[in-house]
Length: 295
Image (cartoon, rainbow, N blue to C red; front, side):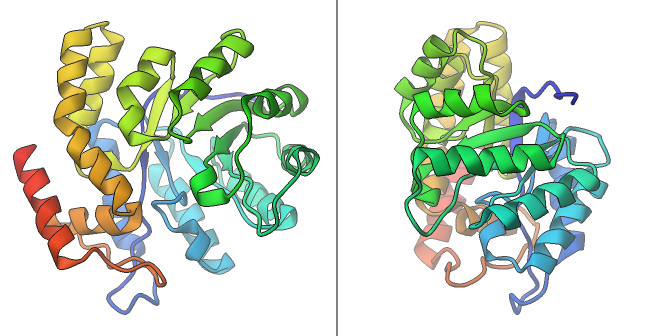
């Protein structure tokens, strides 16, 4: 197993639909990927929360996964979210992504029933045993209903050989500090909470997994570059400049806000798939104002 060097700004893609919402719009997906890569992001991550992976049929998921990996074409690493309600379905997706050339698969332990720690560990172990690709363990209780403690994350990290990195999205900066402390600095972790970007980098995050580069890539990249240069004053100024937008797209729901923002910037990607509503008129107007301020 070769683990790619993941760092910097990891851009999350949308899944575009045609106007009726029933059909994938893969050409629009290709345009969105090209925009992200051309902007300078360091990796592409399809089929996460922004990509509405939970709302796709298996056939649609396969189409988006295969298309994304092929279209990225190793220009940057591709991290495919393979999460599903059952272990068997997550294993199927992980194998599919690996066979089509994904560099990393990301796993969120989603379940209808509350899982025990033993069940969560077994879930990751089964996926790890089924593939040789690196796995990014993803902790996001807001979407999965499962909150993994730092101790459990480290237990999985040490027990499953190809779990080699962690995405932390609880919004609790202390989780990142504890990962550094208890993991003795040996656990690469990535920030998944937009409003924590600056603090996360200060805590040692290797990168920032975010949908924001679909709308403001230059500001996101400039923040990372300022952090890398140890220019705290510039990093602070850059972060607070973009913070209102970062907070808005998170609170407004990433599929709705990012698709509305792409429409405002000239890339039509359709609306989110029901039951998620498109961003309302007031929200679109507010988003337009935020984007105008950041030009």
